[in-house]
Image 1: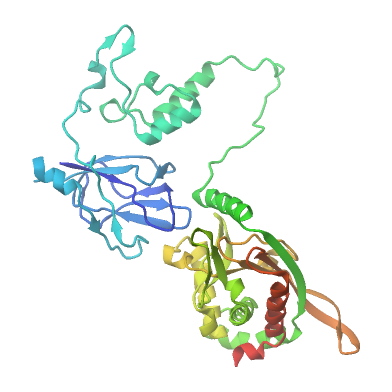
Image 2 (image 1 turned 30 degrees about the vertical axis):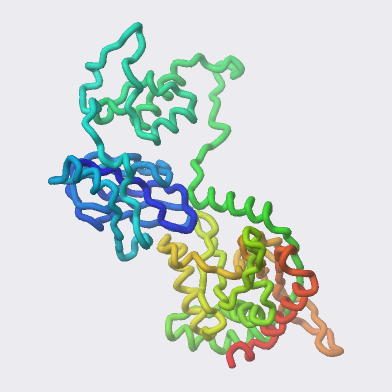
Length: 428
């Protein structure tokens, strides 16, 4: 019998993924739990393991193509199972645990359509008869190829397939479109003798970029954004950092200013629960979270990702620094798992690390707030009755004004700045 193994729902609201690398090919024997394909989702890059042992009978999609959850990934030929037993086997699911795969729980390996009855798909495509100049049946093609043809406005039934059993592939569609474009007459608006170079460049949206776009719109649409700006003098913070930086460096830990800010935020959230909450309109209630998991916006080559450091209030500055180093490295090397990305209660974004001073951060919905850290600058400050040179850190706090009132915003930010102004209180 054959299974159709569909792209499973691996959690966190994912609905599609892009094929990054195939580990198997048609005719290859595989074992249950063996990685089939490496998929780039909107949150992580992860391997998808095989739910069954057998032989790969068909592979759907090429590297770079997008596959939706529930769409076929592979067909697996399973020996020794047929008839009524095949129907029962096709309805089973198996828990698959693969270290590092980022897939947790039970994968839906099949549905009622997973058992393939006999068909004429294996017949020679050239032997099909035609009546009145029309094809006897629709072209064989994967859902990905049909979607591509539809997007390009191409009649897929006019394309000669070169895949198995005459199946139309995306490569066939690309060749068909390219040939049609070459056959088109030149644009008369371009004077002869003048070479027209490319005026635009096209690049497919990555899963991360599509998710960023979707989340930004969702946040702006669902939350009532309000942003407050302030500055905190950080000369004492700079002194403390310089004192402990060499000690942590000896243990391979890079100490920046960010661990102090994260600790200050976590400690302040304990006194201002509305900023560590979310609104549940479906159940007409507020959810106040008594754990303090801080998401860190990390700028990567693929786009912005927000891994989470858990229970920041319980960690020392050195522990926060260590975890921050680890998670930032994983983000830039595309090694983050779904567990690294979920359960955040508040977010911090450090645009100052790349030169920005002030910004209006967008809330990581459905969280209630996000704190932005700007580039530190040297400027005159008043200390007591004296005007002296100081180092100032700009802060931008965006909140969901449906949840947090203006007075609470000011009180929370003042408490955060008080901790930053007295960093020793964060170490004690």
